[in-house]
Amino acid sequence: MARYQDLERYFSILSATGWNWREIYIIADGTSRMDSRLSRVSPSPVFALFFLGVVLLLVVATSFGIGAIRYEFSYGGTVENTETVRWVFEYEDLTPEDRALVQRAIDGERFVFGSDGRLPGPGRGEIAIRHQEEWHLFHRRMYFEPESPFGIASIASALTGVACIGESIRRKRRA
Image (cartoon, rainbow, N blue to C red; front, side, top):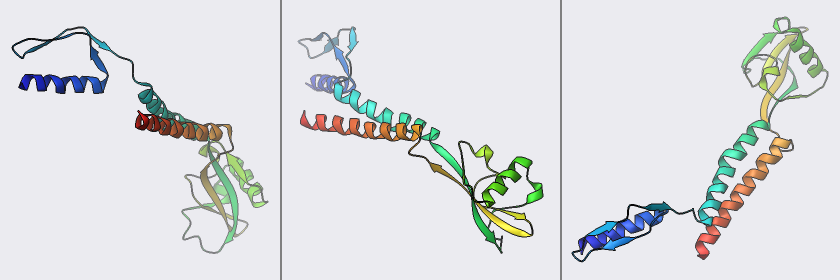
């Protein structure tokens, strides 16, 4: 009888993982012999829907989300104390492109770039630049742009992934 229980346990493990055997013989003395021709059954629609949802949510939405990242550079005004600012530079130490960008930002423009390589100075965060005997504070930040094509695709993929996972759970509970 113990061998029969082992066989039932083995059958339940094989069934749970998707394996199916074509023939099984139970011999009179309690031993069992399986046919060596194991065949793989296709995954259930519930599992396929769940798997699709996870891939959409974790892989596709993240990949599109990376494309929706933007970098902003804007003017924050003049400051007296630069001790709290991480990056401090003289205007003359900047490249000509960065000087033009800083001057346009002081005049009121806000800049948004697709990569952080276009931001003046190293790193991210606030930067103070000494220009015309005053310290000017600039904000550099990274953000997710939901209205860009990649942002829309990322949000749509995430919502579709959540819907697929929810639907697979609903179907599993109804079964």
